[in-house]
Amino acid sequence: MGAVHHMLLYGCTEPGLINEQVWNCGGMGGDEEDVLYSGESLLSGSICSEGQQRILYAWAKNAPSLILPEDVGFEIGGKSGIASLVLQLHFGDPHDMPMVWNLANGQIGLTLEVTEQRQKKLAGVYLLATGGSVEPRATTFLESACIMKEEKTIYPFAFRTHSHSLGKVISGYRVRVDEFGECKWSLIGKKDPQLPQMFYPVEHYIPVKNGDILAARCTMESNRKRMTYIGPTRNDEMCNFYIMYYVTDGQILEADSCGGEGPFENYWERNYPTLNNFPDDASLL
Image 1: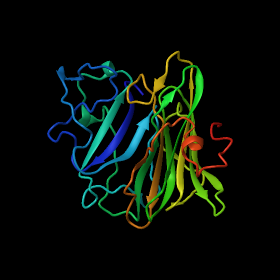
Image 2: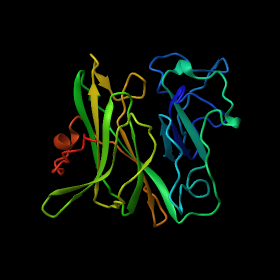
Image 3: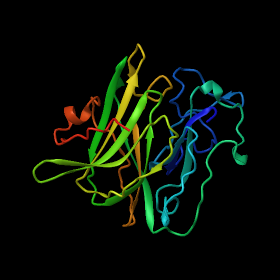
Image 4: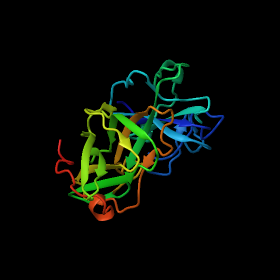
């Protein structure tokens, strides 16, 4: 894994800084020190400046390569709204950043396979994430849930879990509510986030349609004496469940993430009265 803790590939209409190859998008430093590159402070900017900002891929913990299913691809260029690709690098310690990166020879980065032939199934990524906090010397459940509100059907084919050091199990589900208000939970994926954080293939293809609920839980265990908050720095935590999916009707979802309003601790029971019949093994591997 080296100095890079994880990487995120974004599709942008315009990058955060148009005339810069490398810039500081903030987040992982945990302090106010400048981020240096080639001995000079990097300019600061957002990931994308205007238009679309979509997560296309994420990597961490020495994960192997991702191979998409046959006839599945991410659309870029043309009328997709994605004219630029931005690779965001997160460092465990910003002082481990190399002074000079040779991006051209593959010293750091991603290798993509690109084709001009339109694929039959367009791919997208949907992120379930939480805010919240992890109690000291305790186990905390951070949860999220959102209703699918678009007239589409998506087919999840891979999932990825992401936390920092306190995450033990992250699980994601499709939930359907019957006419009697009873919930049926179907597992999309579950993994220990301390393992290589690749996109793992789903065991069963579970279509998600308008009116379904997507729900995720992060089981966090802390031996720290202090409260740990969800945030971008190395002193914080993260609770992310990524769903990689394809559609067959030519258009991916307009929404690419689900957050909701907290508190996120035991969110399913406290903040989402529609949910019931919670899976007993949501925190077990």
